[in-house]
Length: 536
Image 1 (cartoon, rainbow, N blue to C red):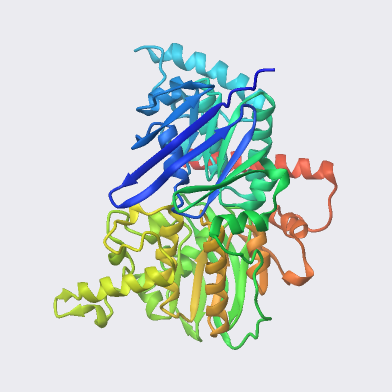
Image 2 (image 1 turned 120 degrees about the vertical axis):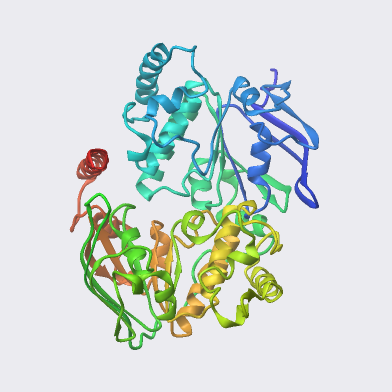
C-alpha cells in the first residue's frame, strides 16, 4: 500500500534577519486531515516558519512540498493558489467593510462587484451551515465581536477553497466560550478532510484539539510527538529547556490597609452606552483582586478609568485621597503620581508606541522623572542602560534596546510593558490580560512577578478572560456582567462552573439544555449591542 503523502512537508528551512537566525534547518511533515500543533516560546520562530509557508517571507534555504509536489511560494497569492489559507493573530480585515465585502476582497470575479457579492453571499451561507461559522454577511466588521471577526477570517480562507488552514495564536483574543466554539469549528473542518496547523502557546489547547504537536525552541525544531503520547509537563520542558511549574506557587495573602476604594463608579462611552453601572469595591495592600467576565461587560472601561485613559462618575480614593475622574487631573500622569501603574489590555494601542525603540518605550509615562532629564534634554544613554537591564531581567528577546517595538513578538512586547510598570514598585498595579499571547515560560515568570509585587505590599487589580489565571492568581474574585459586579468569591470556595454562570448573569446551577439557551442568549445580546453601535 502506498504511503499517503503529507499535506505539507518542509525540508531544511532556514531564515535569518540580519544576525538573528529565526529558523535553522527546520523540517516538518503535516499529514492531511489532521490538526498539527506548533508550540514554542515567544521568538522561537513559529510565526516566521508559517509566514514562509504562506509566502510572506522567502526562506534563505530549504524546500516546500504540498501533497508530495515541490512548490515554490514566492508570495501569498501563490500560497492561496496552492490551497493554503492563514488566519493571523491580528486580523487582516477592513473594519468599515461588510463581512461579504471582506470575503471577496482580492478575489473578485471582475470589475462589476454585484455578481461577486451575490455569489459570495450564497457561498457564505453554505459554508456557515457546514462549519458552524454563522455570521451576518451584511454586518460591518467594526460591529462584530472578536470571535465573529475570526470566523470571517476563516470564511475568507474557505471561500478561496483552502484545504490547508494556518491559525496563528487563534485564541489569544477570544473569551473561553468563543475558544470552545472555535474548537468545534476546527473539529468540523478536520472531519471534512481539511488540514490545520495550529500555532499556540497554550498547552491545554494543544492537548484538547491536536493530533500531533511539534515543538520549536530558539529557531530549531526540537521534537514532534503524537499528542496522545505526551503530557503538558513534557511539552513545557521541551519548549523551555527546563522543568516548568504549571501552577502558581504562592503563599496565602496577608491583606493590610485599603489602598483603592471605588464607590458607585459609572462609565458611559462616547456613543452614550452605559458600560459600568455603579460598581463598588476595595483592594487592600498585599492582595490581588481578580475580575472575571466575558469581554465587553465593563472590565475594560473600568480599567481605563482607573488608569486615567477614560473618564467616569462616582468616587475613587487612593490611599485615602480622592482622585479626579474628569478634567486635567484625571489623566495617566496624575494616576502615576498617585502611585498607580497600568498594564493595559491592548499592548499595541495603549501600552507601546510601535515605531519607537524598546529603550524609549520603557520610560514612556515616566519620562518626566528628573532622573531621565538633563536640562531640556533626555539622558538617553542612561535610558538605554535602564532598558538593557529591564530587558535582561524580563528575558525580552532579542535583548536589543534599539530595536523598534513593532519588531518584537507579541509576548516580548508584553514583557516590555510589564517591565516598565512592575519595576516602578507601585502602590497599585492595574494589569489587564497579563499573559495574552505569552508563552508558557514567560507566563510562569509574569505570574511570579505579580505575586512578588503583592508580597511586597502592593495591591493588584487583575483583569483576565483566562479563568484558570483568575483562579490561580487571585486572592478574591469579582465577577462582572453587563457593567455590574455579580458578586465576590473566594477562589478556594468556588469553581470555574460557578464563575462561568455568574459571567453569564446567572446565579445557581443549570443543566445542559439551559447552557445552550444561555449561549443563544449571549449571542442575541452581542447582536443587539452591534445593532445599537450601528444606530449610534
